[in-house]
Image (cartoon, rainbow, N blue to C red; front, side, top):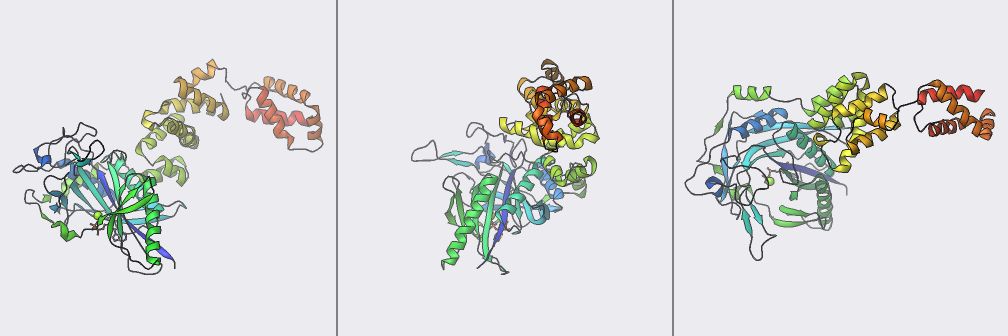
Length: 479
Ligand code: ADP
Ligand code: MG
């Protein structure tokens, strides 16, 4: 029997506000436990939540970017459950009337194919606190710093058909929220995380199978592994004559397995009802128009422009527009170098620069070579002061020593030899030293041309101008 995988994702993006969604406490990560929780976050009786206007603006921004309806009226609801890190006994969320409704996003798959994933809704909610187990024996610690941190929960349609598609979609959302500057996207700190809903059905069957929800997925790699693992487990259970129970499962990256956490609650277990402490959120068209005016160029638009304006392949354009910072860096290099060399700039940003950043674990904004510095180096390739190969050596030195390209080229005497007399002299030397190869070449072994080029480059310390070497060598070898 052939099986088809069905996946829907619930992504939690922590909104990058300074203060919490319903209180004035700070949201900064990493503070001493319980130093960033005030009476509202602690759930004291009699205190009242006040909505942070900024979260509404950020949610609207997201909604417009995915072509969704930004609801003119949305409602906060209480989702009731008991947990030690939720002192109020309920989480304030949105249920029947979320602020963002019915959007969509296009993803690009490995083979270049495109696919549209539906976004059912995105709603605002507060985060809960954290239970800490590691430093405690026989009891747990509670840190309420995170309580009340604003989240945008982005719920997809069950439109993904493989773990790879789910990862592509999640990466797309990750790129988007950072472009919009509504979330820092830091997955280690939990600012961007997802639950994956996974089911399988016999190929051709219309009805969806029973789904399990996978929690604790905080890296793209884990998401893919966890989903693949869960799909295999479900197929095993069904083929062994069993049935899938709707439940929440936890992924354990150390053991690469999922295990049951709890049976899945139904919505009515939560006794959702509109929060009487908060008015419905009513927004005017003028507010939506204002937000629309602040939208930056979006990733797809930027990639299309890179193809059009810089003549890049769709693949290169996609890579260079994957983050706003990389796109900005690349375009600063092109601006300094000139549009005819846009492809050269692309090769270096995606090649040597990206490798050096990876090696040192740096973001492009912390690059040891700035856009102007890289452009200055590439300019020396363009004006034929150095070859592309020597440029790699100069790049390494710039990265290590922090000096300019010109300073390194001067100090190390790397300037390309373009004086044809000097090049001829080297060629004569090489020919004189290799009489046998010369004879073979002249009697038809064309392949030896490469050998002579190599020798000339070697003797010149890599500095002879390659185009000139080619021309002069051809003439001399013919005799
Ligand atoms: P809940 O609120 O209980 O988590 P929702 O109906 O809001 O449930 O769905 C949550 C997610 O589960 C959505 O992303 C949706 O696309 C996905 N989903 C729903 N049914 C299935 C299914 N049979 N298989 C896989 N994913 C599903
Ligand atoms: Mg859910």
